[in-house]
Image (cartoon, rainbow over all chains, first blue to last red; front, side, top):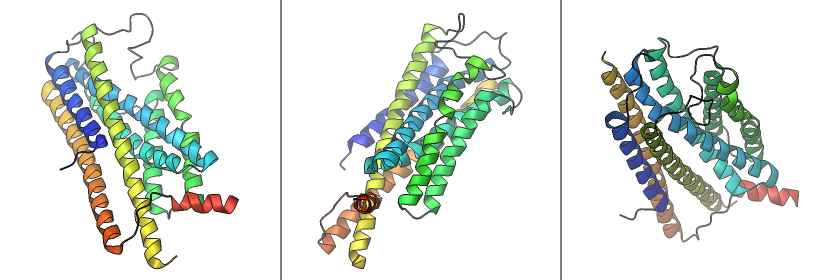
Length: 232
Length: 62
């Protein structure tokens, strides 16, 4: 069977994730057991951070796609909008889920409604959910695309807000471990596993975005074929 | 529950979710492509990637 480029990218991303998991469990050093309530659960960090990183990439694709559709009426822009919202939802859910797992073990509660980082990221994921479900429930047309693109454009404001949240309002979510304050850095082994995880998630999300754009292309081909059959 | 068991269950859940999502997307893409090609061949219609919504809007504007 013929394997396409996007499928090869997806497979290599998945393989990278498996390697990340193996290294996270077997090679990455443990954290200071006195500093954490649940030191082993900290290893979810190697999945949580790359998932959030991939979600930001997906939201950036969503923003660019929305802008391209809204201002240029670009067909590729609309495909990027769809792919970005779907990938953003999947990665957002993974980051939220892994965060809840860690929160439950470390803080004793999976969610804190007063923490800025948690809530702005949760809102971003809800926005992606709204875009995915909303698009599926509406007929495809210029007005529908304009409405959802507007949400994609304005919703992106939450991305920089989420990014700076732990730098400005540290409530419960830990502060940045890379490019953060002095003393917030991680060991080189931890950094390497995190880097492999980030590269793997980036590869996987690129594969997903390409595949999703291809599906939208097929849907448009199908719609055109149907119109031709209907004699429109 | 032991910390590592808890973590393993969480990881397995996420991998399973990710694998299902990836499999669904890839199989949907393959299915659609095969069906489209078969339809276009049987109807002797030339395939086109044009976006009808974008085309309608640009023709209305011009």
